[in-house]
Length: 143
Image 1 (cartoon, rainbow, N blue to C red):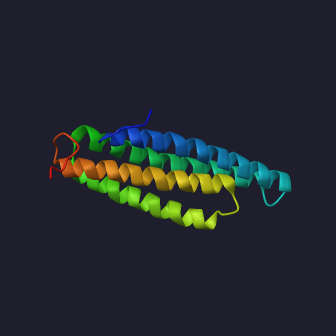
Image 2 (tube, rainbow, N blue to C red):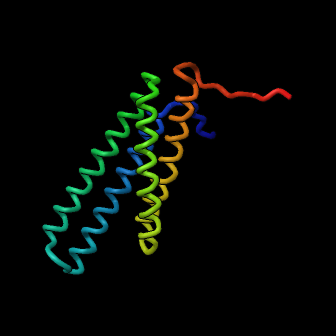
Image 3 (cartoon, rainbow, N blue to C red):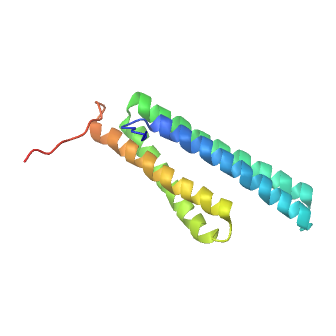
């Protein structure tokens, strides 16, 4: 069964939020354990930094999640435009991280999920804008 969302930016943002939160948690735990086992630097400092990073990333994607639901519920052109802009930033960060984390499987996976979900959400938000507050439907071209 394919996921056929026409304008549900809130649902897509929920999927993005959950997927990236889980992946970032796994990445943080993995990185912290590796650094503590290898004895490079202060283990407690590394764990504290990983927790802080996780909280910041989760809050930022939580804001995108709320913006996705606001764009969907209000069908607001401005919120949809802001969502597209924010998802464009997520896309660029994901693209940069993908080229940077070539050696890390979890880093590459996080980057791919960022890239794919950001394009998907931006597409849904664009469809909301093009619908001008009305229903989002397919346009069939008649020849």
